[in-house]
Image 1 (tube, helix red, strand yellow):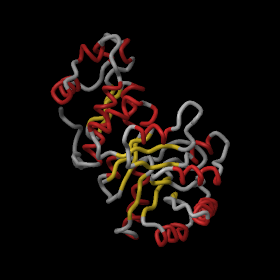
Image 2: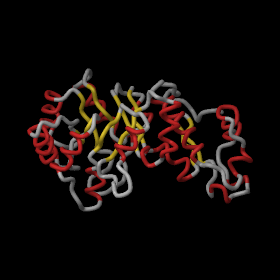
Image 3: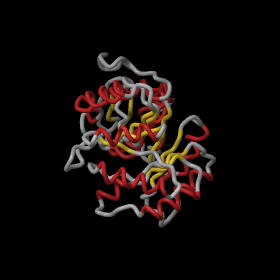
Image 4: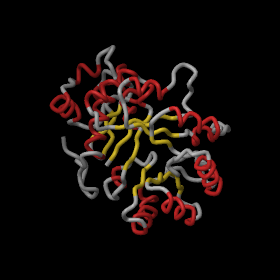
Length: 280
């Protein structure tokens, strides 16, 4: 499966590390990302990336009460070689379809995005006219709360039963319980950043807190998951004392998380969904 790392353009260091270490990974860039200080597309291209997905950032714009300028977005797409995504409108399938058709009329081919709950005829049109369709809708209508994989499961059962051979991209649906159950063509994830943001480690199908207070905690009682330190050392050469020391580079935990996500989604190295808590 093709796997794209979102929010990677924010860090030159991580961009270089990923491209050097895992050249098979793609990067997802958001058009709505503020370009006041740097252009994310220019940055990822400069680092040698060629598998680039360009998201319109419509969901972020909608949360801020703004919209994406379709004409400006179309011109931006024409400047770069990428996999552009259409400007979808959450919970408004007709408007999303209209935006996609508008871009098509301007000669700009983009990936349409369908959200569960919209008219199924819209999905039928997307599938009939586009080889690659995005699936969104991980937030419940009316708020930003993410839906659980159990809630989404019947929707994907229906999707892949009806369209078993079509290419679908899972937007922000990087849940192993779903990604490893269905034949998605691609997916993206920003969860790799929980290492430097929250001190969390992704391990197989579980997310473990490495250090609740990051480098300020000295009491082992603040730590979770016995065995995580041994796993860190033997698998990634990171010592417990090093992680807890002042000045530790938390982006190294991001690197561990990217490694684990790649194992799950690209290599398919994941425990069975019904298995117990992983043993390190």
